[in-house]
Every structure is written in structure tokens, then in C-alpha cells.
Image 1 (cartoon, rainbow, N blue to C red):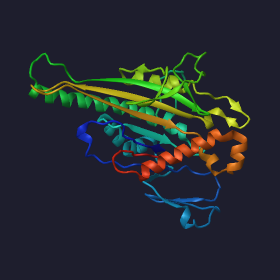
Image 2: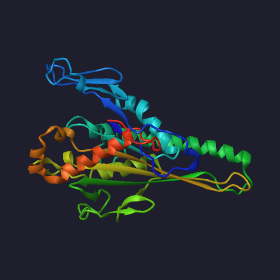
Image 3: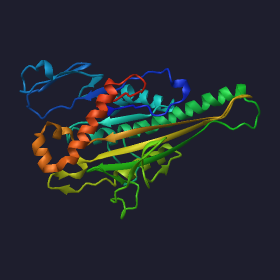
Length: 324
């Protein structure tokens, strides 16, 4: 599981808040029956043996934020590692949860869980579905809190109440091209153009968005997009395993002024759930990668590595809890 929280624009009252650039969370899956263990772990440390059953070398030992064993459920992971990020999201921070691992390690299942039979079914027990339910609980609690505060300070009975607005987008990235998973079926595999906005950063031209007023609508928006992912196979493997998917929830919160001389406030933030490509290619020979898949994959991996290094080594001006 991987979570990465990166601050974009944030309100002035959060300027003094420092965050963790990256927080790496590991989930361990059991090996096949009878296999010798090639990994040892404790609460905050993972040791990988190059030879199954042998002692790990110092360079193969890693300190991490937290390690979940095979017995951990999605609910366990969400309670300890995801819910604190959701609270930050509601407080106005931008959050990214990145699932990183080899093909077959359970990245997609971690995010999506067990799905319902119907294409747009709101069922599911993955981290995204848990986040959706908890998000609406948090927003309900905040609405009650802000409403109580306004009732004590309100300048007139006609003042507007606290309100919030949610919309989603869902894209798939493959070979450095972006595809809209909410697009019409015949046009959904037409790549969209990416451009850089002076104030908003990188944007996708023509990207579809879906408004969600309830938890069920938000779940349905996620499930309808995931069903549009490319599952075709090519000579080098499944497109699904080699593509990245990004599900984004945009949140806008309106808080009316509570007294004379004060201004209304609008707080905007987003949370992104990223299902990354299989990481086993990182262990392959670079020359074979170059010949088989060209320079595109190498550039993508280089960009990801550079981003993670910048988050880990940069100043504490940005918040970035991350999990893997």
C-alpha cells in the first residue's frame, strides 16, 4: 500500500503546519505453501533475503513507517494509516495514496476490494470504498460542528449554512498518454492533452468529472470508472498491469462568515488513489527494458524516482504522508 500526501495551495492558517514528506507503509502477503521465507519483518523494519532462508545483508534491510502482516485486513490498514489522511484532506490538505508493488501483490485488490457483480454496483470493501464512507461521516460531523459554531456567532438568521461539494475524475496512464475512464465508450481510448496552468499546475484538457452527493454515488463513480480500464493483452503483457490509474476526489467546502467584518471561506482540496504499474520491471536489466519497451517506461520510472526523492529530501514546506 502506498500513500503520498503532497501539499498544493493551502490556506494561510496551515502555513505553520509541517508534515511528513513520505511515509512508507508495507503490507506483507504470505508466500506459497512450502516456500522458504525470503523476508523478515517487525513493526517498523523489513529485511529481504536474496537467498530464501538466508540472513539478509545490511543493504537489504529497510526502515519503514509501519508493517502490516498477512493477518491484517483492509479495515485494519484503513483505521491506522488511511483515516488520519482523510482528516487532513477534510482540513484542506491535498493527499495521494499510492499502491506500489509487483504484479499479483494485491495492489488493485487493496484499493478496490471485493466488488459487486453489477458493473456500477456501490459494493466493495477496498480502501477507496472505506474512504468514501468515512469521508461522508467526517463531513457530517464537520457540518454539525460548524453549524453549532455559527449558531453562537451568527450575525443574522438568514446567513448561509456550511456546505460542501464533491466531484470525481478517473484517468488511466499508459505509455505517457492519459485516457478518460469516464469518457464515452467509443471515445474513451482517445488520449487527452496535458497542459500546465500557471495557478492550478498540470491539467488534463477535456477531462470528465462526476458530481457525487451521497456515499453511494461516490462509490458508483469509482466502480464505473474502474470497469473501463484497459484489460487487453500485448506481447509484453497485460495493459492493466503496465498502466497507472488515478481516481481523484475533489472537495470544496463553503463556510459563511460568522460575524461582522469577517469573510466567507471556501476551502478546496483533493485526495488521489493511485494504482501504479507492476514494480517487477524495476528489477529487470535496463538494457532489456530499453529494447523491449522503449524509452517511455524508463522516463516514467525516472520521473517517479525523482519525485519521491524530492519529497523525501526537500524542506518541510509540504505535507506528504505516503504508503506502499
